[in-house]
Length: 293
Ligand code: GRF
Image 1 (spheres, rainbow, N blue to C red):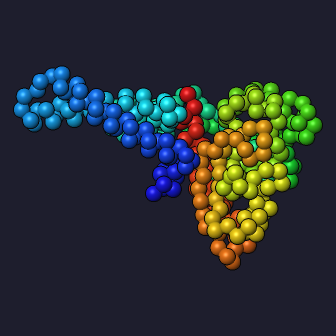
Image 2 (tube, rainbow, N blue to C red):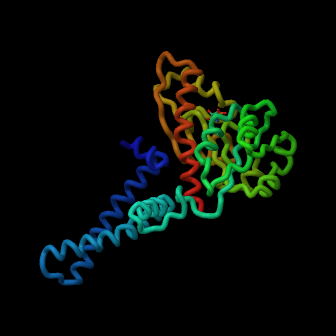
């Protein structure tokens, strides 16, 4: 059940625990304050008491969970959770089909390889007037992702080592394109500090294993899967996380798990992992855009 909630809410395990605590304490607080208020008004017949109590509790509950979510560090989650509930009930206006608020969000996808994740993200937002894949950034002229950019009519930027690591990390070029969010989808160079500082909390990576295990320098592609199999792990998965100065290290946004079988080869496991990535990565990106104020 824990895993299902993690996938449904697109959060990590610790966050699920904090969210459940917020629900429990927020619910109790609502009941407590509701009863206190009811004692103030001496309402007559039993049925009227119940009706007024239900209305009161319904109004109090969002305030209570928002309040309790602050010390638990889950305020942003509950703001978007309540917004979603409001939309479902028709109380809050739908800003768009997807609920992503104006203005148009511009995404840059950084990739070094085939670009199957990039393709899934492009497909996911196709026809969405509020999200634009504005740029594909790549460091390898022969990478498949550049063909995808060409086919999709998305501008591509082929970057070089020197200006990326020792220069301005192409920050002006990204700012010029009004990039709001950077998605690393199989991008093999470490992100320089200049870029992290220019996009604080706006750079997201996907890693084909369950971090913090099997991450760090040299842990990419088949090397990750070979290490997972060699260690005799029974489970592997994907991690979507914010990017900081260290390899595969920033705060985890989302994880999903898949089995590792005794007969697995790195190729077989890679296929299973790719399926997980394709299923979840675009949805998590959309959730992140929703949370971006
Ligand atoms: C993915 O497995 C991703 O987790 C890793 O690199 C791979 C990229 O695959 N960082 P693709 O180029 O998107 O097909």
